[in-house]
Amino acid sequence: MTARPAARPDSARWHRRARHAVRHRLHLRLVLLFLLLALATTVTFVGGMQKAFSSGWRSAARPLVADYVDRLAAEIGSPPSVERARAISARLPVSVRISGPRVNWQSDNAPGAGQGHAGNPRWPRRAADDDTPLFSRATADGHRVDFGLSTATWQNQPHRAGWATLAVLLCLTALAYLYVRHLLRPLDDIRAGARRFGAGEFGQPIPVRRRDELGELAHDVNAMARDIHRMLDAKRALLLAISHELRSPLTRARLNTELLPDTPEVRTQRDALLRDLAGMRDLVTDLLESERLGQGHAALHLEATDLAALAREVAGEVAQAMSGDMSGGMPGEPAAGPVALHIDAALPASLMLDRARMRLLLRNLLDNALRHSAGAPLPPELHLARAAGDGVVVRVRDHGAGVPEDQLSRLAEPFHRPDAARARATGGVGLGLYLCRLVAQAHGARWQVRNAQPGLEIEIVLPGGRG
Image (cartoon, rainbow, N blue to C red; front, top):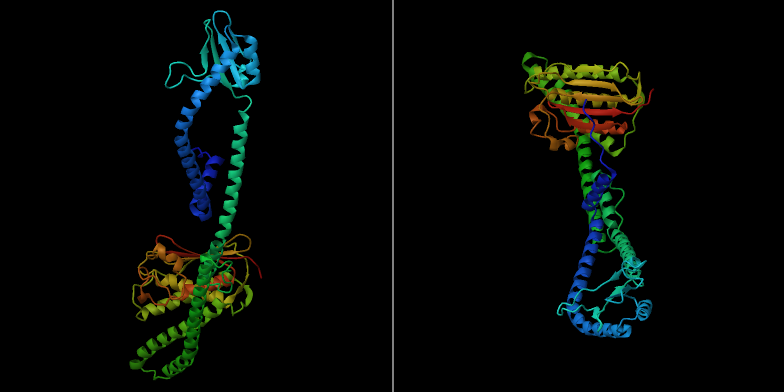
């Protein structure tokens, strides 16, 4: 029994989310760039100014400090006076330490003297250009007086200034983030609008909030969407017009073909012509049906439907039709055999479905699977299984060559045919799966296409709702 891997700590998950946010959020990267630029500018300026002025100020201040220390040492006197030293340490932020043959004393704020550590005294080092310590003096009677800086009175002031500076910096960062977020808000609108346009929803344009470059970009994208919408409408109108105009000639041609003499010489040609005319009729019907479903002009005629019985009926019809096509000279090898049905006994007795359109969906799915199972070792499969609630999962799989992965997302688009996997010799113009997707979406179903290796698998999850 293998042990489960330990869950990542919250800190690692937070770091991963932070990296993802920085990598995919333009406004965060702009704010970070602003901070880095501000810090780099501050460090460069402060470092340069300190380097420029430190040497000159040190040379000018050293004589003044040395003279002041001489005055303090003279005030303590020789031999050193403890009372005077105590008065100096009480009056000034300095600590005093006297060592010698007669007097050994240090002030209360010196290290090791009661509360001396709290004062944080600092004993200066020797001067760089002199062997005599800058803050240390020797008296005439052999004593040594050391002066140290006591920071007790002012050491908290830099801390307060540092915290105040940090607070101001954080406030400026927050303001910069809000302003950058406001500047880049049109990008969110443009992204949402592009997704709507990609899904075919052109009714809501991208709001143009400003008149800057991003506002102009939103305006240009709206103009492009309007042009695409008009182009698609013109394409649909052309298809509808052609489809309507073809119906009458096709009906007359089929009638005239059926009136041809039923002689052995004419029968073969007549049957082939009738099959072609039937294919053209089905194509026109599919074009009209796809337009109605795609534009939402057709309401579903829901009725209580036994999906299992309908699937058996359609599977028999499609297998018989494909057998007739193959015997009539359809190119390609024969299919592996009839459709293999796998129907769950726990299916709902009936579902509220549009029976005619569900028949169209099943017929197209099975027809597609049979056509692309040429030479496959196993027949196409139709699975009906119970889903969550009262829903049903419809799954159709063939055992053919499948399609390239980069073509899966486009497989249910109108008139799209991945030539690498499905040659035109197998028939169809790319409307079958498009119609299936429209019918599934009209029923509120979930549609998914994936490679089953081998073959292609299409899964439709119909929602519940008994009749």
